[in-house]
Length: 206
Image 1 (cartoon, one colour):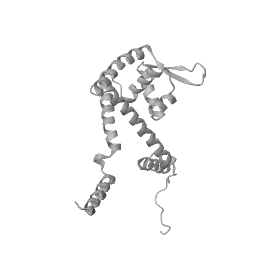
Image 2 (spheres, helix red, strand yellow):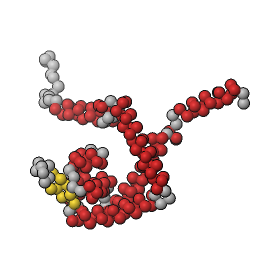
Image 3 (cartoon, one colour):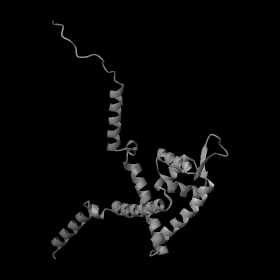
Image 4 (cartoon, helix red, strand yellow):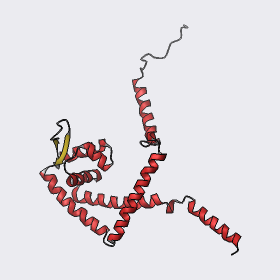
């Protein structure tokens, strides 16, 4: 290969690497295995204990960290507070979680396990650890350490990118959210507008 052909080959190789290709796009390759693991774990918890994803995550967090407020759960689980509130209300109705008054701030309500909740968490823990063991059966400690380090670097890089490139008012709600809000606004406007009870105007001619 002559120098000109070699240079052209390098340029084409660089262009191929920088061209967007979803099949080898890193964020997709990160999302797919994580989504698969989360989906399988969620189905496992639902089939064994009748708990959907938000429910068992709340149970796991209360069991690991102790009593917490709805605000704390929302922050730790990166979920909307309304979704956390609905899920905790369902767990309370099923007798697994209790609302208590904060020992140092009586204005704040905390969530903690009932006796039945503690027993359920113990059973959940066994299943969760079995699942984790199955995942890492063929993965060495060194590989796990590298995975942890790489994931932390990727997370930090993503947060830095968000700070630099994502507008604050664009971080919540996209086009679909705006369309829904506009539709609701129009519906509310049409419902509040006064409606005429008169019939069609009659001509003044006889």
